[in-house]
Image (tube, rainbow, N blue to C red; front, side, top):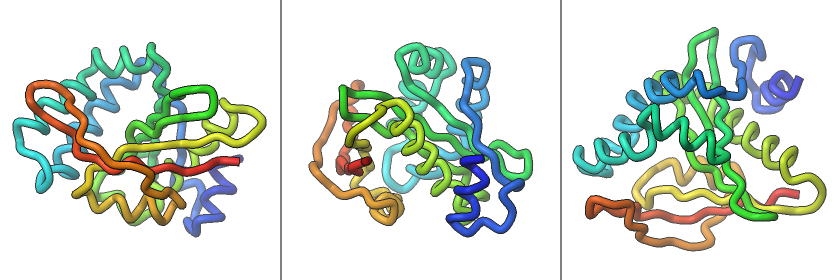
Length: 182
């Protein structure tokens, strides 16, 4: 029901064209395959091929995806006309803080409001996990990633920025954005 109402609210013509489901451990290979297409495409003009390769292993190897799920990452997978086309991941970072870890939609499915729906799914997850009262959801977005505009349209605001070492001499040069959720 949430997806149907959401689709109507963001202007998708037919709610049955899109669905979002909670990922299970058996979906790690699927998330890995989706990431193998979308992540290099997203960062090809921002990061070196070496850093992309390193980050793919660090974040998206099947073993690391399973470990992330065991550590509390909640993944949701979006499908359009039955084709898996995107994902989002959220973790709890404290009593009143959540972190939007990953949100990606395959390039050929962008423009269909799937990212909007995945973002709203993340908010719904945060609300259902947090319970009563206000909390926040933060994310890191590369300072050269045009997706920053997407997050601003979702109501997120820059609250900080930093250069975060991730190993192998690589850094994530990010804005930290936040959305207050009531």
